[in-house]
Length: 440
Image 1 (cartoon, one colour):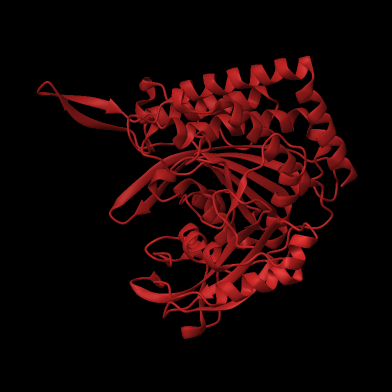
Image 2 (cartoon, rainbow, N blue to C red):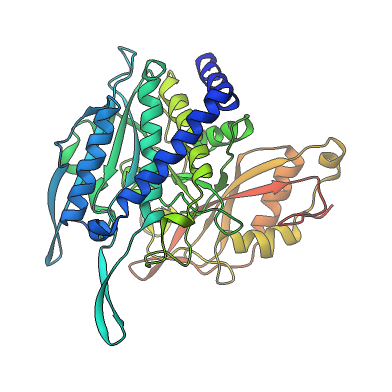
């Protein structure tokens, strides 16, 4: 922990100096240049298996190599073919490694990943003529690519601060069922059991009221949830909002299904997703730069731990038959509340009926409680418990109100209703206004 605080202080000091400002400016210039290279029309939307995807893969390889990252794949990437029904998926991954310094821990790995492929091109009719249109995919996911390149740069420069090794992975085939990360875990990387955590960057470029920077922790892993809260509570320039909702079907899910603690950073969906309007000018590059700082700090914290992060959250499923409980990433359709998700549940039920205990108000207690509960196959809420506590009276209020919830529409797998475990963050603020109001 002492080493982490030292590194954090160094980063904060650097950000506050003239040299730091110049370095930050240079970073933002590089990020925009990299986004514009990735989305260039000549790459034809970098569809999996295309020449455009290969060209971008070679570019990413060259960028990592210049940073001194040890490359684990050839220049053109780790080329692979996979059968998907009657079709064959063709794509490639670009993977490098920054070796840790600890003789005992350097053979354990933190994977930081972002997919670089997109959906290619389509046809449109203009003035009676058919024309090819390129889907640029600036947010999806050139934003993650540009951010990851800068994370790799910072870790490479400070590699002597990392006890464990860090794998930098640019996955192909994400738009075809996250094929690249599946291939990496099941066919390509021989030491999957040595991966201690995965950090995924997918669609991290937007900002504003509807596109906050959010962090999702797969399976509500308690240690990782606690880590995100500790980091957000420090004087970092970005504090992502913790969300229990897995917005993006992305590569972190394959790692989680292997039992690897996993985190997703994203600014979420928007109307320009998979359209020609997803362009570089709509990205918030300063926010992406702040995310670089946050991801670096998280990776360094994980790398410096004496022990591996435990699973410490909901398993993929538990029990057999009717007692089986799924987690959100493993169901076909998620449980819903009033035709909405967790945010609707918080807005229309929890924050409508929960009360701020007088004892907590007197003592000035505020913060966030993370609660976990099961919505069973009949839509009933049960097994409510607090996994991140704030104060006894507050915790009791959270359990009481969630436990009294009306029925949900249950989750389904293969069209059949199933039980699913859900986690929610309930915020307690000593304020009379805000997005939600808690009764006093």
